[in-house]
Amino acid sequence: MRHSAILIGGFSLLMFIGTANVRSEEEAVPQDKIPKVVMDALLAKFPKAKIDKCTREKEDDKVIYDIEFKQEGRKCEADIKDDGKFLNYEKAIEAKDLPKPVREAIDKKYPKATLKEIMEETEVKGREEKLAAYEVVLDTADKQEVELKLAPDGKILEESGEKKPAEKK
Image 1: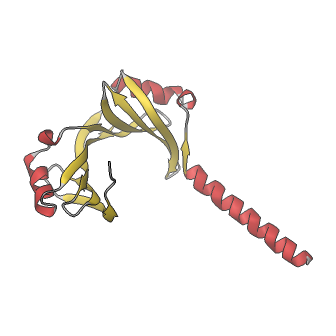
Image 2 (image 1 turned 90 degrees about the vertical axis):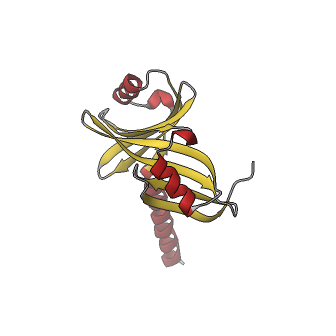
């Protein structure tokens, strides 16, 4: 009996530690708890940012703040390190603003798809900013939701979400 109680207690402790680790990987952060250096960096680049959501996670021993916000009504997202340095940022764009090679790659792979969301991703390294990719969420002709990440030249870099029914609106 005592042996069982020890095993159950040990198992419970492992479960608690396991869930604590999962929670520490990505954690919601209220706006008033975002470090000043991170907020200052965001507002320097996006002075009219209205924050919708912020999460904090650890990647390779670095703390990253993933901030979703709107800038003058446009959906945006930024990944900023806890020292205030940008890793990247994304801004929503219209389908008509996609480069021709990107649009052609989407049309070839998913003819008659409906584009739901398009984000233009810019990587930041020091003072250098470079258009890195386009992230596109679409509904295929057979009503499957797919997420694509495409290079500016139209090459598909990542593809996920196939065989996931599209959300009804």
